[in-house]
Length: 278
Image (cartoon, rainbow, N blue to C red; front, side, top):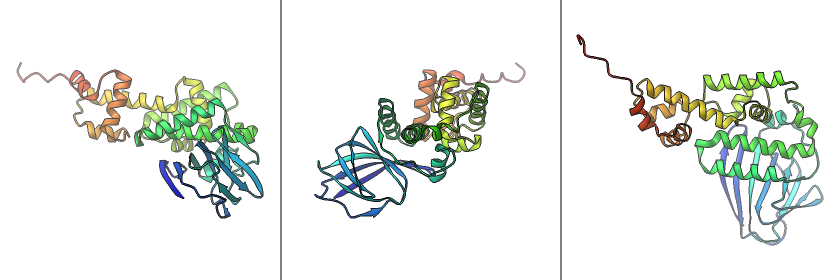
């Protein structure tokens, strides 16, 4: 069986991969113990799993929850299949489950919102490293939604209780991103002492924008300020603001301002100083 695993997002606390199983053999794979916690979301095909003596069916309307240490086997009754694999670190998993990384038992089925979040994740990841923040935001939200089906109380336990607390959290995120727009989602949540899931949800509820979109607005505003101050090196500016490359900065700045950085550099260039004695 040819298994092709293509990384979509690789970070210290979260890995996401696109996996294709081509030409799978008949019957069950050898028994093995799961060495990570992960979520498997089938996009095409059907997979059967034999987990700790219980058979499960995985299809595009369900989520397979791979629990660390479970004895498992797999079969591919309909031939080739394709799925998305999400593997959060234990600290990230604990932050999503009220501080305890132990995953509750149960089955998870997709909702329309989860299906859309899954596709948004694949789309963001497909745009390359330039949208890693957006991909991480979608991956964390998707993981939290799956875990909420197993234990909604634990997933909700870290949410700020009052409107004032939610506002303070959103303001803290805005301040941190304004100071360093290169911060990633997981680093930002760690700095603020909350789970990335709750940070993302609270921020959108307070500001009306996703963290990824707000961060791009800040970076575009910083780019405009630098161009107005006479910055000429667009590649260096892109690196300083945490863009993947100059092309990524051009895309974001054009989306936010309507014009590319090269044109803005000309329009915003400071006036030349008058000659001495003039």
